[in-house]
Amino acid sequence: MEKKALYISIIFSLIITINAVTFDKKAEGIFNLTAENILIPNDTTKIILSENHITVIPSDFLPFLHYTEEINLDKNDISEIGHQAFINVPNLITLRLKYNNLQELSGGIFAGLYKLELLELGYNAIRSMDYNVFENLTSLLNLNMDHNEISYLDDRLLSPLISIKYLGFSYNKIQNISGKLFHGLFELQNVFFKRNLIEDLEISTFDNLPTLTAISFWANKLKSIPQAITRSTIVTYIHLHSNNFGPLEANTFSNMTQLKGLYLTGCNIQNISESLFNNLVNLHSLQVNNNNIKFLFPRTFSNMISLSSLNLGTNMHEYLPRSLFQGLHNLNTIFLGSNHLQWIEPHTFASLPSLSRLFLKNNELKTLSESVFDPSVHLGELRLYSNPLVCNISLCWLWEAQHTRITLEDVNDMICSGPNPLTGCAWDEINKEDLKCNATNLDDKLRIRWNIVMVNTKVSGNVIKFDNLSYLNCARKCLEHNCHGFAYKKSLGNPECIVQLSKCYPVFATEPGFMYYMQG
Image (tube, rainbow, N blue to C red; front, side, top):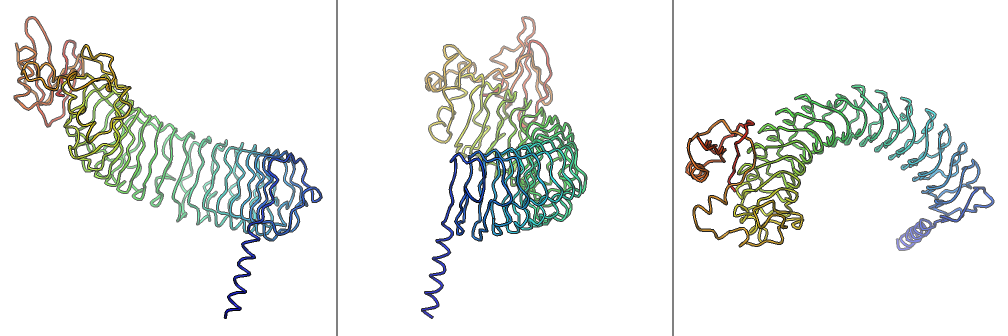
């Protein structure tokens, strides 16, 4: 028994020794590959010939190499691969040919590579491929063809790749994909066709792919989200950035109950129906930033109970319904930067116990009420810079909170728009006394507490109207009725005061002379 164990130990040590042999001729100015000038030991496990000036891989330059598992030929000038060039390396697992000058791939160049798992052909100038170029690559798991000049894919091209898990054809010039291209690829998990010229997909394109996980067709020419994608019930990640969708139908994602990531950045989306995301109960990340969305229904996200990251940045939002985020207990990151938000309703973020990152930068906020948050939540990151903040008593709570439960980022870029003498001051340059946090006089509080959030704006809906009131008395009436805000029009003959009651959504209309004020 001891002799047997010793024998096994010796064999194991021998295997380790063999696995450690590397033939490294990286960046040594090699131009030609011949059996005479490239003498590779028979026990080599890894061959590195990258960053040379090799132009041709001849058919006969490699001796029989039983142990070689990786060949790296990246960053050469290779424009031609000989027939059966790697036939003498039967156990090759990884072949790297990135950053070369290949334009055509002929059938037979990869003959004999039955154990190959990774083939990298990105960053060449490949325009055409024989339909049988990948014949016998039955063990291939990862094929990278990114950054080439491919415009056409024969529907037989991928059929030998019965073990394939990852396909990368991004940054090419592909215009159409046959509905048969992926048929029989039962192990396929990831399909990446970013930055091509694809306008649509045949409805059967992804049928019968039981392990398909991620699909990426961002920056193509898609006019709508293809049914070939949305009919899937197993896909978990969809990347469709930078297409031109416009309106999305209400039932677009109704089948996609397993979806975890949906990325629709820069797709010219203008409207989102109230039921668009109803069935996405497992979604973790949603990106609809860089669109033209102006309005969201109160229950747009109500069923997305697993959502943890939501990006609504760089849209046209002026107003957020108070109940927009209600029930999203796992939501920890919200991006709302670069919109047109003029005010945020009380309690908007109050039902988010997991919230830790909130981006409100580059909006039109003059103030931010403490009541928009749950007081028990500790924000690890709040970005408010590039807003016209009025630095007065209404922001005293923020000054206090930044030292206890809120981390304000980029405070040197938070510039006060008023009142004088704080106009132009950075937030990190002011203190509690500057904000008049200790004001006691009632009229002083009334003067400071209200901020103009909209100009030339009249409010209607659930309101109470008063005539012949001064601004201060209008503010008092608002406080007496537990109001949300008030619109006031100063007039020599008949000042108008319209108090907007709380717990309802205001209806705004443009009318010169009115100013809409909101509590700090």
